[in-house]
Length: 65
Image 1 (tube, rainbow, N blue to C red):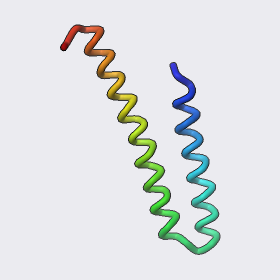
Image 2: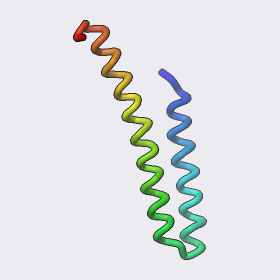
Image 3: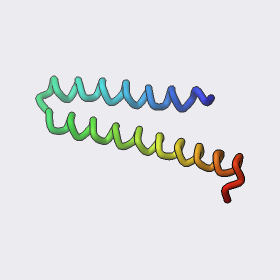
Image 4: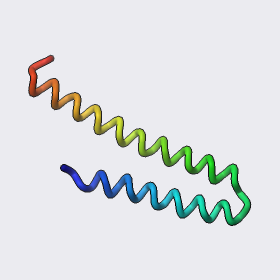
C-alpha cells in the first residue's frame, strides 16, 4: 500500500485545519468555510483517482475488458 497517498491526504487536512483556525480568529468565517470546502474537493479528487486505479486493476485481474 502506498503510504505517500495517506500522508498527502493527512497533510491537506492539517494544512486546511490550521488555515481555517487562522481565518476564524481573523473573523473571516465565510472564507474559512470556503477553504474547508476546497479541501474536501481536493481530497475527493485524490480518492476518485485511487478508485479509478482500483477499478482498472479489478478489470485487468478478471479480464473484463
